[in-house]
Length: 355
Image (cartoon, rainbow, N blue to C red; front, side, top):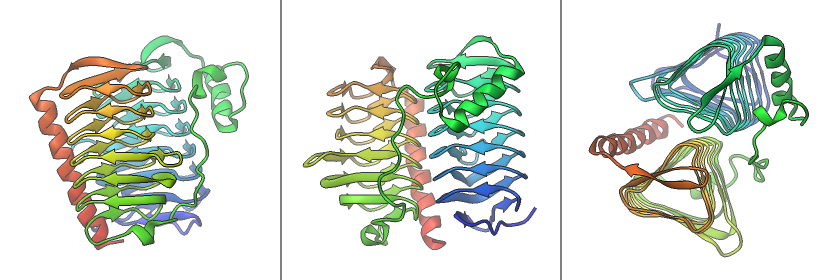
């Protein structure tokens, strides 16, 4: 195992940690492999895959396959991400600080969260979310938010679903693994607009794409694979707020997206024109409908979808599709969200030292 000379990959050290990638892996465009990542042989990466091992480790087994805009990240200082051999990760899916055993498959837009364990040979269906700490039995098909067991799955069906994920062809079984709300291909070249919008006061990752008017306050950040498609529109990002890997901001003519201070926008989020107050959290893999207002301290849960013009009330968590008020945010939640913002401020400083 040695550092890769593969074309199209951004091999990025973090502090003193350098990725280790087998030379027999294959990559398409704009793939970012970062920090304490170790990748075994014969893996394949589609466009804009991001594996970001800054605050912990990522270990990937052999013969894994990653669809476009998929993301693997860690829970800083707490949980790394482990993927066994022959794991298939669908388009725009997210693996976050968890363990995915060998032969598993994640459908498009699936999210597996911190400290979860997905047992061998399991399928997480498209648009499904595995909550933190869940341990899923091997050999089952899981669906929903949160993901629940539907039925046992045999190896032959699993392989058919793997073919569907890679080909994206509809047919028998496709309803389990192809998303009902597919993400359109990116419309702008990664790296576009990054240099023009960069400053010593904030951080923009090199594979982001920025089109439109962007205002960023001090200590804010935009991460790998983020696309801001806002031609003839505008985006404002408040102090110490972050837009995490492979999220999408899509605005129409004359629209505006306002992001307050100390806001966290998780990985693989889809944002339309909306207003996000201070200290909001927009959970991983969620979709924020046009005209949504998230009041100060409001939270949209992972995988949730807000209907247009929804008002997310202050201090409340909203979840589901369409998102509805779920519960009050606890003091422990507030504390952890604030720590997360500070972690991203620290990440930004480290990446700026080693661009």
